[in-house]
Image 1 (tube, rainbow, N blue to C red):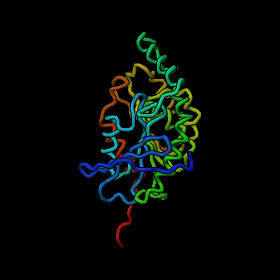
Image 2 (image 1 turned 180 degrees about the vertical axis):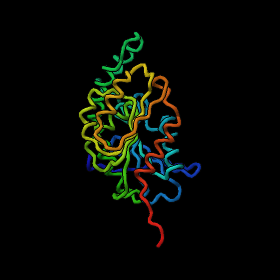
Image 3 (image 1 turned 30 degrees about the vertical axis):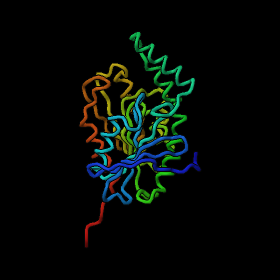
Amino acid sequence: MNSEHLYFTAETTSSGVIQRDFTIGDVTGALWSPESGADHAPLVLMGHGGGNHRKSPAMVGRAQLLVADGGFHVAVIDAPGHGGRPRTAHDELEIDAMQRAMAAGEPVGEIVVRYNAHLAERAVPEWLATLDALQKVPEIGADGPVGYYGLNMGTAIGVPLTAVEPRITAAVFGLHWPEALAEQARQITIPIEYALQWDDEHIPRESGLALFDAFASKEKSLHVNSGTHKELPRFEAHSAVRFFVRHLVRDVPAPA
C-alpha cells in the first residue's frame, strides 16, 4: 500500500472542528482537524474497538476532545472487516466463534486474542501507508510529532504498529490481554499511559498488569479504575488529552 494516495471524499465543520472522510486504496478513514491553528499541529492516530468503526460514538467523542482541548489532528481508519470494509471468510468464522462463546457464557479471550492478532497483521501495513499519506497533507506535514491512542482491539493493532513505527513517540493503550502482545511491548520505550478495569469480566487483572509490565518504557503510567470491561470512565479520555499535550506539543520558546 505504500504507493497509495489519500483522497478526501467529504467534509463538514462543526464547533470549530473540521471532519473529513478519506480513502487510501480500499481503506476508509476520517480526519478531524482544528478549524483554525491547524498548521503542522501534532497528529494522533486512533484505533477503534472490535465491532466498531472509524466514526463510532467513542471515536467521534475522543477525536473532538483531542481537537478542541489539545489542538491535534486526529485520524482513524476502519480496521479490516469493519465499517464498510468487507469481511473475509476467516473474519466470519472468528466472529461466529466469538458470538457462540459469548452466548454460551464461555470465556472469549483466546478467540479475541487470536483474531485480533490476525487483524493486526493486516492493519499495521495499512496504518503505515496511512501515516505516510497523512504526512503529505500540507497542514500536517512530515515533521510534526505523532501519537497513537487505542483501547481493546485498538491496543491489539496499536502495540505492533508502535513497535515498528519510530514516528510514534507517545501512546495510550489499555484493556487487552498480554498474549501475542507482550513480546512487541518489550520493544516499546516511548511514554505510555495504560488503562485497566479492575473488575473486567473478560480480562483478568493479572493479565492487564502483565501487559503493562511488559512495556520497556521508562515513563509509563497505569490508570486503574473499578468497574467492568465497558465501564471505563469517560474522564480517562480527558487524561489521554493531557498526556498527549505533555508529550506531543512542543514548547514554544519565550520571547527574549
